[in-house]
Length: 492
Ligand code: NAD
Image (tube, rainbow, N blue to C red; front, side, top):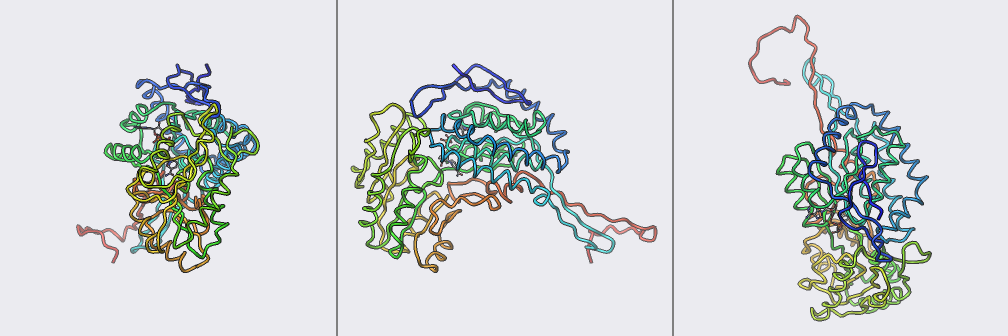
């Protein structure tokens, strides 16, 4: 059985496998992944601390050169990387390539580090006194990532963390850990010194050891809400800087003036892409006024044309979900929906008979708060439709939801769209754009239970998260300036 290694100090490190990695399209175990002992985690952190001593003083031009080389290597190896992602995650190859492209943006952004790390200078703030500021690295940072974006989310964190001079310990999801090892190998080829980027495989115990370890200075986490909250609370209690992004329940509002064909296309693409296993997936379509029946008819007609199958087979729209347990959990929401008062339009059973962890597209009408199928993040190919009377009710529904990751509105009314973006308690908003993941020169982050901490991921907030400011006040006194003055220093 193939065992997926750690990547430490510039080399692959093989240990006995502890948990299975499946090919979700066949249901077979294709590898195992180790769970490191506490003493091995200590050993890795000793290597990381040592590497931080020199990497933190590396020149910005050296870092820029490595990031540019990484960009070229990722472009050159996109097909290989996409195959690795599809084999362990199950998403289609074109979707895996889309994830790589969005991850690459973060490397491109980080290539501008001399601009991003520019400090400030104020001359003559008091007589003969100047002030300047600059940013330094934090030291050793832990990047802890979820299964659903095995390369994009590691790149959200890694590009800026390395650009700002930190050493990275990446703990990828144990469900699809190979893409991280591939990234480590590319970074070594790009010229990154040994020990600066390490992949430590493992599970919740490994994460908890990192959260409590004195040699970790900051924690960047993406995953489900309960774990995000635990990670944020534990890391900050231990005095570490932390950002922890959690789960979501994203609503897409369709106003009566919207083009319903465009809205139905968007609901299909954003609801069922990657089998709904995206934190920015649309999970609730909010039909405003009397459009629900017509919109559902358009969605159903498109949904019946979707092709579900192995991600490496041409022409598939979406693949399997990540595990059999997850498939059964997703199904349980659909099977329980009618008893909760929803209407099951499609139940996903068309794909259940085949090997692998497949479930067909599911559509639930008349979902509402208080139903599990509405309240919980299902994270599968299940779209719910909520019916509301007007714009105000749509906004109230979104704002009453505990999550606030993404949302979208479909309309031709510019003022309604503007009011929507101002009134919703959500971090990322799309106007006729169903998956509004910001480009890398902005930052990514939800509100409420979708994020713990204040610094959003990547972009300018990511640069700031992974670095800390120093402010230097300087004076070059002349002999004639000599005087004793015990008063608090004043500028005037
Ligand atoms: P998860 O929370 O189960 O796992 C995420 C990471 O945490 C993994 O590396 C895992 O090993 C570790 N982990 C799991 N349980 C832990 C515990 N009890 N203590 C410490 N560490 C633990 O998430 P997942 O199932 O891999 O990913 C899907 C979730 O991630 C969904 O909820 C999705 O919405 C969310 N997500 C959010 C974003 C975002 O940007 N907000 C992006 C992608 C995914």
